[in-house]
Length: 178
Length: 178
DNA sequence: GGGAGATGATTAACATGTTAAGTAGATTTC
DNA sequence: GAAATCTACTTAACATGTTAATCATCTCCC
Image 1 (cartoon, chains in turn blue, purple, yellow, green):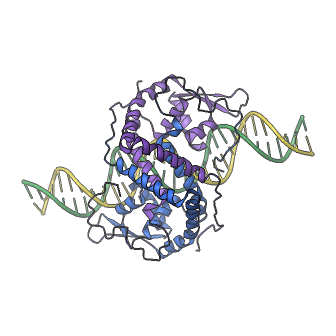
Image 2: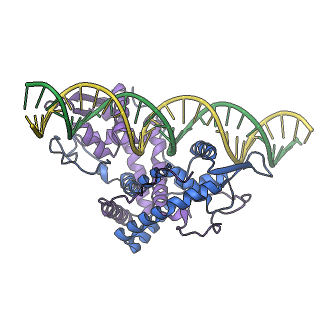
């Protein structure tokens, strides 16, 4: 049942207590990665039950959803659009193909490339899920506010663009002292 | 747009082409879940190499990081603070304990509850990673803007709160027509 | 045109996400 | 006060995230 509460009256410290060592780092739960993670989880929690009822995961939905927007598409490009890493996509395509929700063929000009498209069965599945999905999205928009939602997405896009060419400044230590 | 793509001159359609069926759904790549996912990935991509150099994953870092803020903490509360599901936390704690980065003991009043704390070795590891981590965070803040960063986090918090009590409206279909 | 290197995709190996089931200890109830 | 129930945690099982390695094809260059 998700982690929607619990009075927790027994724990020793609220986890917001002063750190035992000098704390140069920002309050943990307010870091940007945590904020983004929690927000996304709050959103996805709304969609998962419906998807699950249709025997589909979030990623499988992303793929089928992306496939409805094109006639056919190469695997690499699909990975970019659905924002999945190659290995994940490979596995999922194998399963979706086995379930006959997609079709795959080799590209005409380049035998390395595979071209994927959604099947009639896949389209039917999308059409079955879409109404519920739309209703949920509408409710989220209603609650948060259409204006604010657009603003938020704009900021997220700017953030992403801001970091696009940032080189990670990792020092070379391979293991902690040992 | 972001996503420093590549010329990709060979693909058949840019994936932004008109859908073959009537498309009642919003442009896929601009959905809220995708925006959040991409923004978070853009941020985490900066931290992962440094963490990896210290032999640690993002989640392991979250746990150790959370532990530095308290003297000791129960597992359930730690799951809440580090935003991890119970099963994930169980596995990670087992590993961190084997690596002697944390210590675990049974709670005094309730034998079911386990109390976790960071070890001296764990603290040393945190101290080794913290400077790089801080530098990365500072650079992100500099690029995106301190003001905007605070605004963004405020909006994310409001979004999360907006959806806190939303009941998922899943219909009961268990499988698509077959 | 053949070999070195680049590219598209998959496989491998390990860590985590997610839901369900299991286990041991605590709490309630009659 | 023992059975029923609840609670904290763990295990199980499967799907995905993540990095590295592999495999097949393609390109380039001599």
